[in-house]
Length: 113
Image (cartoon, rainbow, N blue to C red; front, side, top):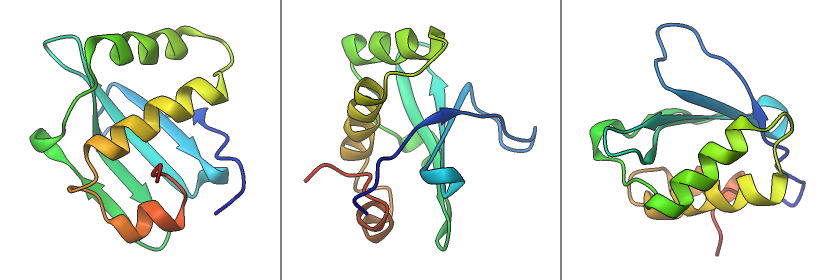
């Protein structure tokens, strides 16, 4: 997909627990993030229209300290900096590419080649 991702903050039902939630592509994709005990951000779940929900569970790779801080800085802003948040999400999808359906990542443009 060549359109802009346009990330936005969102919420999820109590049955889908996470610390932070983002949506993109007009709600076609939702990403759930956790703040780990070692103060890092991990992608715990991602769902795609047409594919379903991919739960990474405790197997997810986390961002390093610098990128985790950048994520937290973005989440504190009134308006997400689309360039910054896209870079961070791409870093997480790249770190966890072996745990997420590659065809979904490619179709929705959520992996940097």
